[in-house]
Image (cartoon, rainbow, N blue to C red):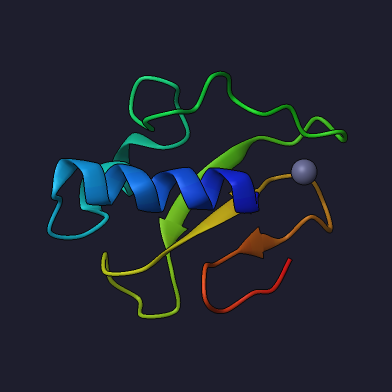
Length: 80
Ligand SMILES: [Zn+2]
């Protein structure tokens, strides 16, 4: 999930996006996240998605996995 998060941050920077609205709305897709060669496969068949981070708005984001217990990763909040 950290890999996805790194690329999401890089995509925002590369597109000069004001915040993460577009990325969060689009989700984890190879067409929307620059440098994502393929959507990563969760070992427990979970699906990855993006959501607002701890700020509760589009200025932060977190990567989530739908598999039970896999949780989420928010840059600057969660460690590896
Ligand atoms: Zn997972």
